[in-house]
Amino acid sequence: MFHHSKDLQFNARVSKPDPAFANILLEQFGGENGELAAAMQYFTQAFSAKQPYPDKYDMLMDIATEEFSHLEIVGATIQMLLKGVNGELKRAADSSEIMQVLEGKAAKEEIIHDALKANPQFPIITGGGPTPRNSQGIPWCASYIHSNGDLTVDLRSNLASESRAKIVYEHLMKFTTDPYVKDTLSFLMTREIAHYKMFEAALESIQPNFPPGILQSDPRFTQQYFNLSSPTSARGPWNQGSMPKMDKEWEYIADPLNHVTATAGLTNQDEEKLDESEQTNAMSIQLGEIRSLEVDQSEPEGVAQWSTYGTGVPPLA
Figure 1 (cartoon, helix red, strand yellow):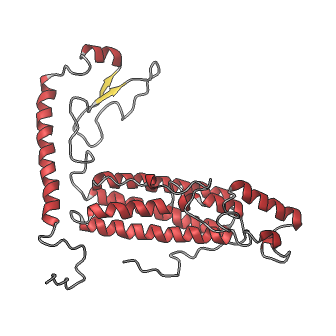
Figure 2 (cartoon, helix red, strand yellow):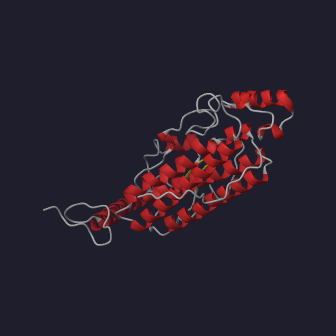
Figure 3 (cartoon, one colour):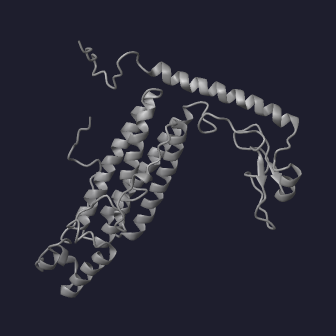
C-alpha cells in the first residue's frame, strides 16, 4: 500500500526557466540510469526476497519507494524549468516570467527553436510536461531493469546502478548554473551514494555471498589470467599475487596460444585441480541445500498470504 504525501522529500526550487536543461534532465526521469528505472528495479527484486530475506525485502521496498519520490523531484524540477515554455509560448505576453530572462522577440524565438531542436516532444506531444522518456525522446523500456531472483546477484546489480546514476547527476551538475537546481541535483546524487552503502551492507550480511549465485567456480579455470594483448603487458593485482578474498594465487599465462595447445584446449589438468573440483562440487550442493532450506522454512503452511494485517486474516469458511 502506497501513501502519497504532496510535499516533496527535498524542497526542489528553480530560479528561472531553462528548457534546454529540462530536456537533459529527462535522462534521470525516463532514461536507462534514471529514477524510474531504479524504483522499478528494486521494487521488482523485492518480491523474490520476501520469504527468504524479509529484512532485505523491507530495505528494497523502502529504497524503491524513495526512488519514486526522487522521480517526483526530477519531474517537478523539469516542470518548473519549462515554466512558460509550452504550446502557449508563442502567445505569451512580453510581461510573462520567461520574457523577464530574455531580451525581446528574437531571443524568445531562439529558445523555442532550441527546445524543439533538443526534444520536439516537449512542446508538441506532451504539451510542456515530463513523460517516461529519455533526453532523446526514446520511451522508457523494461529492459533497463535487472532482476535475477538471486539476492547476491541483484544487490551487485544495484551497486552498479547506483554508481551509474551517481555519475549522471555529477555530469548534469556541469550543465546548469542555477544554484537551486544544483542543490537539488546534489541531494539526489548524495542519496545514490547512501543507497550504494545500504546495498553494500546488505550484501555483506549474506554469507557466503561469493561467487554470486549457488554454483562455485571450477578450480581448473578460476586462477588463470590470459595475456591476450601483447606485446606490451601490464601487471597488477588483477593478474599477479593473491586473488582478492580468495586463498589462491593468480596464474599468469604469458603465452596463451602455446598453453591452450599444450593442455589440449585446457582439458589436461593436474590431479590437484581435479581433486579440488570434487570439493567445489560438494560445496555447490551444500550451498544449494542451505538456500533451498531458507526458502522452504520461510514459506507459510496452508493458504499463502502475503500480509498478516497485525492480527491475521480469518480463513474462508
